[in-house]
Length: 257
Image (cartoon, rainbow, N blue to C red; front, side):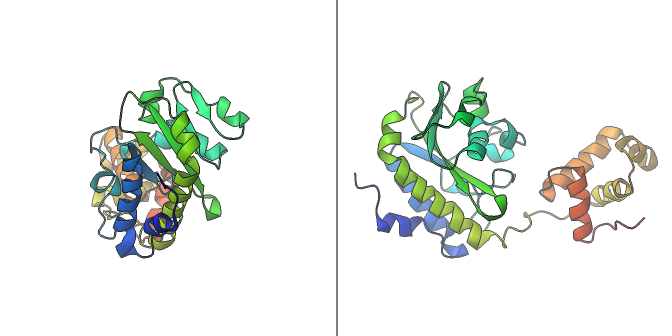
């Protein structure tokens, strides 16, 4: 199989927002020919997953992933808990992994310390070729190539034959996707906050705790936490402080006491 070619590289390169979907389809076709499925992430710290120009989720509409509860972009702990994302922080070259360990072309002692317990559940695959994509400003993307055959847990042959080519295609797709779609995805769709979410954040901005806010608003503490969590999800914030900061940036609240 003549896997590595300039035509393939050009096909997976995102040249415009309108071309995101065709580039994803090209990457999907390459993976399918090898009996694999693609799991892309343009930023392992971001809850969002790559989309096309119309907001269609590429993972489901192109790469064939189900919309069940275990999909990685709905798992709030995936960036911290998955052995694959952890490995992408310590490695810049392609690797392959299963429950028995990581394999790379050059030794990497950091990978041997990664916890692989309950591997299939935490990695959401039984084996994978992983490609870290280290981008400007410290952003880390990743593409995982997962075998369609659940019985296929040894990818040593595929790694030896195809990892360099898959690495090039993955890096080309993710890096150009980020260049083209970075400004378009500055905020996730559905980022409009509700009245209750704004009210909770206004009190949080002046230092009130969840319990204090619940007493002020005559709502349960769980309800307050629910509203703040929803606001964080809508604003793609990683914690309470960033949620307040982003809400202030968008004009929902003021940071002035």
